[in-house]
Amino acid sequence: QSALTQPRSVSGSPGQSVTISCSGTSSDVGNYEYVSWFQHYPGKAPKVIIYDVSERPSGVPDRFSGSKSGNTASLTISGLQAEDEADYYCCSYAGRYSWMFGGGTKLTVL
Amino acid sequence: EVQLVESGGGLVQPGGSLRLSCAASGFTFSSYYMHWVRQGPGKGLVWVSRINNDGSSTSYADSVKGRFTISRDNAKNTLYLQMNSLGAEDTAVYYCGRQRSSGSSLFDYWGQGILVTVSS
Image (tube, rainbow over all chains, first blue to last red; front, side, top):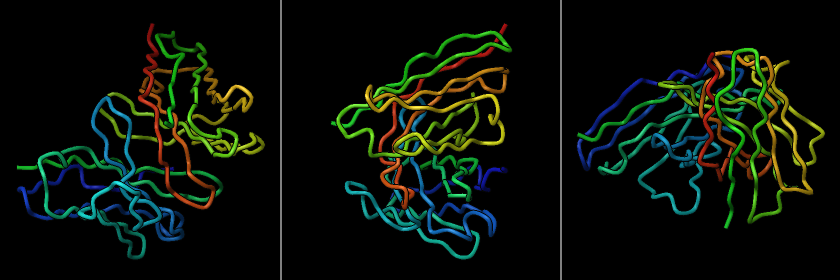
């Protein structure tokens, strides 16, 4: 059970868009439509911002969007705001009732 | 209001045991799958374990299989994680979380986390 692969860090200026990738395999990301994305501030509870690849929970701004192509899922944040600066994690179902997180990406808003 | 509150963390010696609890309120606990996730110091989130709504099915990450046991008491609205043979690598903040339904990756509520430190 290796972690899904995410870039360690990404950055962007306010108003710009950034995309965070999440690379898995045909046994996890590529095989299921069960990919979620979490926003996490240190010391706080994780917050889901995308689930089932591209669905947004109520209350999450439509600036956040998710997609998947093959074994790679992506999170795009458009119209970057200062409060978006956080750690972001992808998570995928990996079969046999197990789940797998990515290593996490630190988003810096310049 | 949905609330998940972890307890039972603390300092434990290598090889020791600890039981974490997660008290749930504000929803029908017995209807939901529950999970434990952890974050080691300076590291990312890692999925640890999952239990179905009636406790009849459990699953674990390879790193904890055979050492950790997830369970629940639906009458007490409480989720547990029994951790045995603890090592330094188990030092982490542990979070309990709710899965909205078995056919979704919507983990919609999480606790604030509880710190477990394994050290002599």
